[in-house]
Figure 1: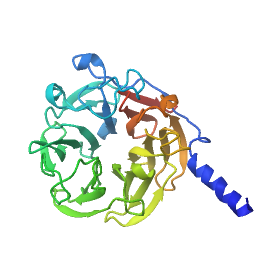
Figure 2: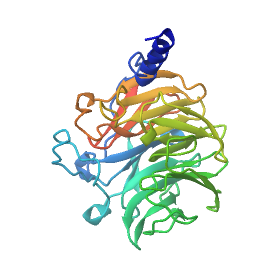
Figure 3: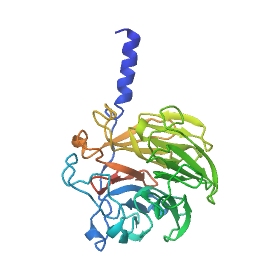
Figure 4: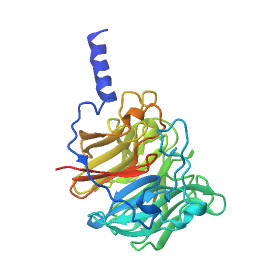
Length: 350
């Protein structure tokens, strides 16, 4: 092997194993639990967590439903595919709010969401949730805006209708709201593989993306956030990268050192970027470990890596850890919303 080839190989190994040399300054803490009158105080499958004003914690979960028994899943864990808020599960609120101390505040959205997926809390305390269910002509494939008390303020898309139009989605995965009010939606659970931008009043503005692996193309865009400068970060999970765009969809950069991102979060005040990888294993994104990656939203440098608690099961399970991640305003507390293990994790940095 030539000297140049050795250098390129070493660079590839470093890029493929971004977590192995990273420190972890975070230690497990005691995460909030549902109140006793909701599912006996135990979580079901969850999908996303966000931190809003006053460091309140909002958990988007699938109405306590779990599906067990898949032989390829760790015993006692759900399959990460079929839980929803339909049928008898529709009586539960899919959004639970806790204060910064972990005290339960309220639940929201009863009967509004079939299969909770993407979630955001804007600077005014409004909650935005995407529904990846498809109940033809009835519900699903929409983005719903709820006020701070849970009242419905806006619906993007057409309930129960799928498509690739200005007023239709096909199982939208994530939603983000810029400080200036524009709304960005990743339409990526099915085949649309795009980002759609709306004005603050819900008017369609523009969109970008097709299926593929080139700049501006996507393979299952799974989450989306907007930083303080208005840059749009997309968790392009199927391509194992975070893509960065300006507010009009012009490609700026891509980072592959944050794992295979299922969920991302940015602290706009500190420019700290969080990414959670819940799918990498020896055959799917080999050389990369499942876990939470913490780094700079400015430079892309990784500062911390928190390994998935079920890392030893990575080669047997389709999904094991967090699909959602968030942090408090001081970056001293991280929350992770675990899908298949149905638990909320919390980590604290001294």
